[in-house]
Image (cartoon, rainbow, N blue to C red):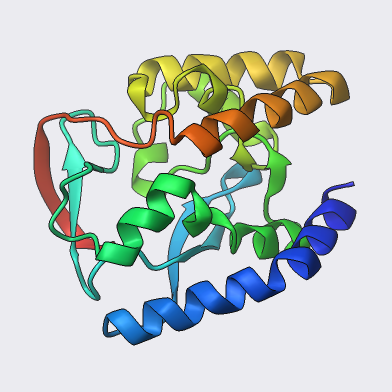
Length: 196
């Protein structure tokens, strides 16, 4: 189902994907796509794809809980990047990750490898399923949730997920994306190594 849905959506969205890629290239230096290593099923790392929303070689900033920092006034984010984040269109290239079998439409959002190293024993249950573009934690508050609460909801999903639950998540994701809910949260920030 993931392959069929992602393939169909990529075909339908192809003109939009092309326009976004062109707009990114015309308005800021750097590639249209941003690649970053993430932890997938069983902890295997893969390169997640997103449309680039930041200036090229922007510093990696983290919240105090080591989650990635995002803010509606983040100076690293380009003007078109602000629109892409608000509409979640920056996540569309992850349909390619789904088509490759690295991700699912629904599942826990994939963490950075260094974040996996901070998992408690029970948190590792998140790695028993493929990571998703959207998930149980996303429809319960997205970035407005603490890291601990997101992980709790992800574990709940892993233990209880069914096709019906996946459909519920997808249906609840649509209005959240349209309304731009839970995209940004203000938290204390620290600088980390690397770039985003």
